[in-house]
Length: 273
Length: 273
DNA sequence: AACCATTGGTTCACAATGTGAACCGTTACC
DNA sequence: GGTAACGGTTCACATTGTGAACCAATGGTT
Image (cartoon, rainbow over all chains, first blue to last red):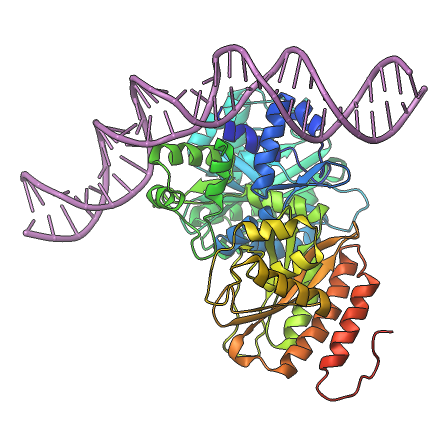
């Protein structure tokens, strides 16, 4: 592992829950020597990635990350162009909507939007999402590049009792996603969270990310699931359009079939032609 | 220079003008060996800071920077809480308003807002601002921590014919800023741009950043300057409040004096008590 | 088709840079 | 006034970084 990688790794320990970190804490989190950690922090600080609170001596993210984010968004405007669709999705479903993007073989959460309808709701921290344990991840494996299957089985950390722990289990979920057009996860990453995802595409024509709805598991019914699938399809089309792509026609047909199969009250008799 | 610092430095070459960079270009920009640069890029890529376009093989900023920015903004909400004031400032002055923050001895642009009033206007790229050559920087030296004076004289790159190139010249500008409550720069960083800045404070009680108006130099008149000063004082008070600080009372008095001295039509006879 | 220029990527001998146990000074809490 | 926890520093040691030279692929030129 390169020294630069170790240095960058330090930044990943910041989160909204832990926005300021002291030297000793960093040593614990990174499991590294104090002197080493200190040097790394110095490098980050002199580059503007972090700054030190003059009083508490603790470190926090610096202004440079805002600049980089601005450049990224002005180049590849993913986040901003997904947000309105997410808001609509959260409103229509009454649950938490979020979008994630694939970079390499890692899924990153991009934005999330909570519905105000219920007092209990899924809360997502900004983080990376494991491929094997989340609806977003399974969606990526199902509709993304082929190497993701391998990457997913590489690290199958068991987060909960229902986390897939073998390539077989994963395959079942992926196959389901392919036949349904939607990926599911039932408390397999975080307890009591049921998620459904749909893929989003960009101008390269390939899979770019997932749009998902995370529900409080106890609230899930077949009716809610049907609503979510319906809304996810709409949201995926919109975000895909914003990202310069188009939803593959056969996926659209898959959605149509799935939606008509599960519509609670028979009202929609169109089948995939 | 640490290897990590060299690696991080690569990221600074991204900008809205140059959002994608190839390996060879990086070598040129960073003046470093190809193998070295490649390893650095690999480290950045595996940490999610950059991603490679599969077709063109060029690199661009990755999703991680968005997450970091989100954490930073949710912790220290500088950018968002400055934006409404900047919009008002741009609207009231008809010129480009921007805010910048100090981290260590470096000034970083945080946000900018262009007025739509004129077809020609100042355009600011996201970048770091030299202390000796910009109104924001001089403002920082005048109202910020003492070590900035030294830092400013350390690197006095001559950007234009009017860039301050000696500690004396800088001192004059800084003294002017202290007696006026506003800092000025006349085409000293970019040609044809005249800027005025006011300091902004945060909850530590000290200088935190500058709010500025950048004008097309040919449009500057005494009347416009008076308007800008007036609006800057208002904007500084508002942003300072958003950042949890208060504008020092003696600075307020300085502003009052300056504003009354320069008010074109005698209407404001109050002097500093 | 042979040529050259340019690109991204890789190898390996060499040495610069990174490493961590032990250390110092300060603060804060019994 | 002992001591524990913190941020920061030193120095002998070795892991890690370095860049000239190399390879393979692409694309334009003669």
